[in-house]
Every structure is written in C-alpha cells, then in structure tokens.
Image (cartoon, rainbow, N blue to C red; front, side, top):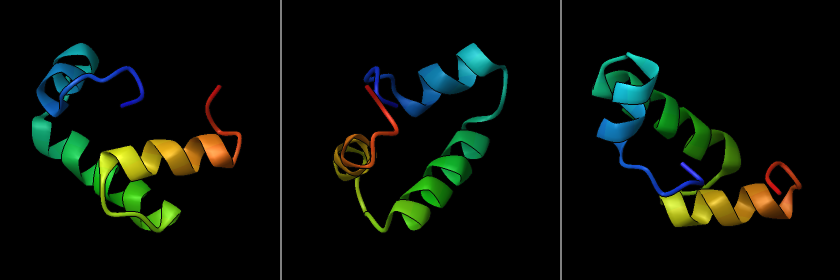
Length: 51
C-alpha cells in the first residue's frame, strides 16, 4: 500500500485474489480507525509502523 500499488497490482505480486487484498485492506483501515488509504498511511507513519 505504501508503495502506491493498486489492489490489482498487490494481488498479482502476492498471487492472491483482489478480494483478499480488499479484505485485508479493510481490516487494516478498521484497526487504524481510518477510512482511506491515504489516512491509513498517515496513521501508520504517525505510529512508527512505516519509515
């Protein structure tokens, strides 16, 4: 997500279905308390989860 890849690109790289990526993305949003990818990245950086 942080690299700017789309769900399809992530799914292809990990050899999983796009739906799987969406499920994990939504679970991440829920755990971080956000609604968008940009908010998730900002929150993850704020929590020192990303460089």
